[in-house]
Image 1 (tube, rainbow, N blue to C red):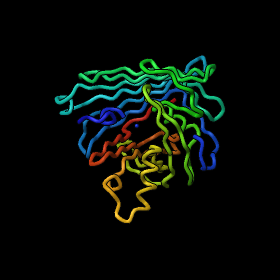
Image 2 (cartoon, rainbow, N blue to C red):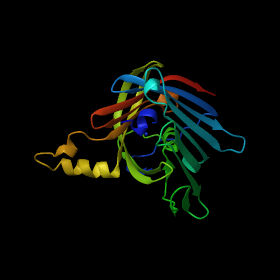
Image 3 (cartoon, helix red, strand yellow):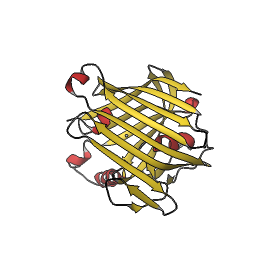
Length: 251
């Protein structure tokens, strides 16, 4: 089964804030995508600061090599946000899947005047405080990084649903990549449901099956590169999908 992150990838809390950085005027990131150590595709992420002060961000995920013989499925994301102080404020976001029978398009607009999330294919919902879309969250972490012990809570939307996540500081790590070796800050992202499950598992004398293979998502952010994510890893049961940065271009 092709997991969405396989060809996609994917802040209020107790951590003390660090001084906000700035986002680049233009950013292009290229990642190699692997599943259980086997190359299956590539991911391109871009960020562009526009003349009106807003930022446009995109992501394109597609199969490559032998994986392309098995699937033509691709994902594209596009969104827009503005920055106010240390806050990233999304304006709209879309995710589109093409190339198979499960194709879809999810869209959402962030209406701050009415404090509503306006979904293209679902009922509108109240706009949660600190809401991010699943890609703008990356830039929120770059702009206002978690650089020391603690955690933040952040609601995310994929253009269809909303789910609350905890971003938990894990420490620092020297990470070799095709783009060189980088000193990184490691952040683990878990859903609120997963967090509560893990809390329950810690109290069990004989943990059940849910406790043996936790689902999570980990980011390695490089401070010397403006906290750009140089590695992202998602673990789901017996499957691990990883994005490793191979090229960075910024201005």
